[in-house]
Length: 263
Image (cartoon, rainbow, N blue to C red):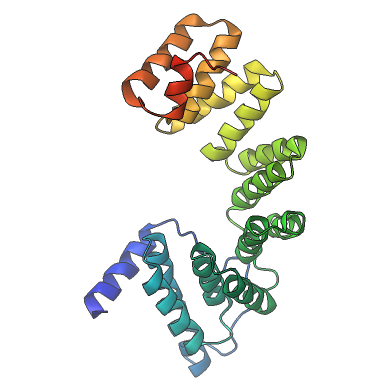
């Protein structure tokens, strides 16, 4: 990798909302040594490799992300966010044993790190240990310095759906919204939950918020259309139907609409 590319990616990383928080927000592990000490230099090298790996991970370049993660742990075998990155890469590559190993190493070094707990919870949920995942999500949201608890609440909701516990899922999604009113995925899920259980005006309010702050996608438009249809608002229903027709022909939502499958 050229020096120009390395520094270019580092600059890009500063502008991104990283999936992997390379600073390990809420991390209980802190390197020993004062500013300018050899220990700090080692930790800094691991941090830079982890940040670069995170940027490559987001760009879908898993081989390079893996290389940077491995360089990070070679630089500092006690740098927890590097193992978190490796866990995410191996999870994406469906290498479950390696993902588990790296997440567990990260948690051993930083048991209170909210982001690592959230990621490990999601790993467990996706690998047949749904019931075990909730403890890690709850540990994440209890960390007062965690800047994005909405992610852990949302993930808990998705895992509750796998357990077919719709009531718990609805509660988790609402908590995700309360943690971040711009989490459109959570807003959509709350709207869907309210619609399913007949709270149509609340469903209308939440889906309207989704459509206000984000570009409409077929799922949101389809839910909005069905809500307005049940409320008897034919003009609003027609408006959403036209958007599906103009922008999303060929989608399952459009096909359901033209076939009259509203439920």
